[in-house]
Every structure is written in structure tokens, then in C-alpha cells.
Length: 356
Ligand SMILES: Cc1c2[nH]c(c1CCC(=O)O)Cc1[nH]c(c(CCC(=O)O)c1C)Cc1[nH]c(c(CCC(=O)O)c1C)Cc1[nH]c(c(C)c1CCC(=O)O)C2
Image 1 (cartoon, rainbow, N blue to C red):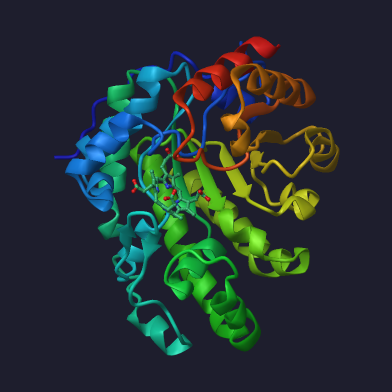
Image 2: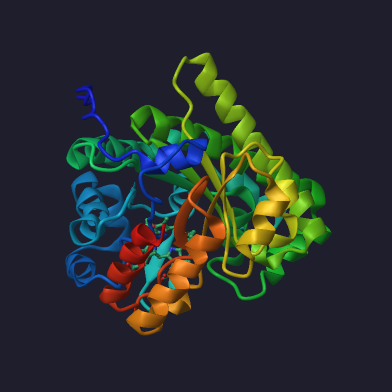
């Protein structure tokens, strides 16, 4: 039976207000991968359960989503899942190997392999994510907003062609050069599934969405504008159209295109409410490029979390001062890494809240 109880009212909406450009009580802060291996309780749970079993079991996904909120005064939660659940729903096997990361043993090698993908019914194989989101909204009791997410087309295509992570993206980049028309078909197929998936997450209760274009860092500016930007724009436009048609209130959308600081102005024209920044981008320069009507998110270097508390506090305070209190969401410039000392999270969150 589908859970149709109304959700508890939101007590801390600073994240959503920052995303919409409204006044906040304090600068909101959350951290990419805030539920993860730097937490001993996460590692403990992972000893009992395989990674994708956690993703697929709403009780476990909610437990892990809640773990960082029990420890830190965060202003957002993000549903525990992975960007690679879409390749799985399209029929590819994805395994999580300890110390290696994701492995796709039967990758897409040639355009002929695209026939193996099963876009029809893909959404029906992702309902567990919606179930976890709905359950999490109740478990949060309105404490903070719940963020849903997806991988973006180029990033997912990269994992599906490379068969896992890659330092060079040599196979995926060869596709761009050798099979441009098939690459467009592939990116459009992914875009269609992503729009369905995000719509489903909003219907399930996601209050904000983040699109991870993490592999943008492998592309030149020209390549980013050709192979990422049009699909990112269509995701936003189609989603807005779908939700509007169904009279479902829009939720703020964040684009995090890692390594695409060369195209911030162009990113600001894609229709997203929030742009995520990695640490290579200067906050003042970013603001100048995107103008006053977009919220910025980021961008502390995850390696700064290994500094001593005093240094980390100073760097965090300086960062928040550069961004300012309006239209800003504090975060790292990429995911928190597994060896990060827990105390650094406490220092980061407190320094953000006390900076302004
Ligand atoms: C590229 C990417 C992936 N997954 C994701 C991205 C985009 C963000 C980014 O660029 O980091 C997104 C992601 N993956 C995970 C989340 C959970 C939500 C959160 O707390 O932020 C989110 C938002 C859990 C996870 N996803 C993964 C873990 C660790 C695996 C484990 O528990 O064994 C977690 C907590 C595994 C994963 N999943 C992926 C990789 C490359 C890896 C291995 C890298 C690593 O080990 O850190 C694919």
C-alpha cells in the first residue's frame, strides 16, 4: 500500500530559502556524501549489507540517511542511493567492489550494445528510491529538507561505456569522436529516464533535487557545451513542464558540474536555481559570472577537512565571507572522503553557522 499520510511540516527551511533567494536565519550547510564511510556506524552497517542492498531497502537507506543528522547540526538530508541505480534499471549489472568502486562487468562497447538497454519500464525498477524518499520524509519529522538526486547523462554514459570509474574517459571520449550520432541517441535515452526518475522523486516527497555531472571535469569547454549543456537544459525544461502539467509545485534544482568552472556563465543560462562549485572556482569570480539571481553551493576543498581544527575553521569562515549570506549554500567542492576525521564535520558546520 502506498503511504499517503501528509508529511510533517518543515521546521528548518533555510536550504530552500537560500535556493529561492529568500532571507535565511543562518547559512545552510550540508555535505556531499555526508552519509558514508567516514562514519563508523555506516561502516558497521555495511559489514552486514551489500551496498546496493542498502540502496534497495528503504529501512536501511533511511537509517544511513539519518546517520549524519544524528551527529551534526546539518541543514539538509540527501537520500542514500547512488547515481548508478539508473544503469542498473537499464539492465546493466553494477557491482560495488571494496577499494575499487563501481564495476560494470558488461559495459556498452559499441553502438550495437545500446540494444541491450531496457528504457521501457526502467522507472518501474526504481520505485524503491521513491519508497525510501517517502519513508524518509516521515522519519525526518520536518527537521530539515530532503534532497533527491540523479547522475547527469554524460556522467552516466561515461560509467556505462568505461565499465566503471576512469582516470581518462578514453573509451567514452572515443565515442564522442567516432559515434557522434549514437552518442546523441544514448544521451537522449538517458535524459528521458532521468526526467521520469526526477519527476517520480518529487512525487515521492523530494524537496530539492541535485543533478551530478561529476565527469564534466574530463571535457573541454567546447565539449561541455556540446555533450552536457543541451541535455542538462532539457532535463530542467522537461521536468518543469511535467510538474506544471500535473500541478505539482516545483522544487529547487541544483546542477553540480564538477570541473566545469570554465562555463559558469553558460551554466547560469540552463534554468537551474543553484549551481554547485568545486574548489577550483573563486567564489567572487563565480558570483560575477552567474549574476545575482542564482544560488551558489560549495566549495571547500575536501582535503581541507584533513587540516587541524583552527585552520579548517579559518578557511571555512573565509569561504563563507566570500560568498556572503544571500543565495548561498555551504558545502564541500566534492564528496567527503573516507578518512576524514569526524571532528572536521563538527568544525565545518559550526564555522559556517557562526561566520555571519
Ligand atoms: C560519481 C558518483 C557515484 N555516486 C555518486 C556520484 C556523484 C557524486 C560524486 O561525484 O562523488 C553519488 C552518490 N553516491 C552516494 C551518495 C549518497 C548520498 C550522500 O550522502 O551524499 C551520492 C549522492 C553514496 C555512495 N556511493 C558509493 C559509496 C561508498 C561505497 C561503499 O559504501 O562501499 C557511497 C557512500 C560508491 C560509489 N559510487 C560512485 C563511485 C565513483 C563510488 C566509489 C567511490 C567511493 O568509494 O567513494 C558513483
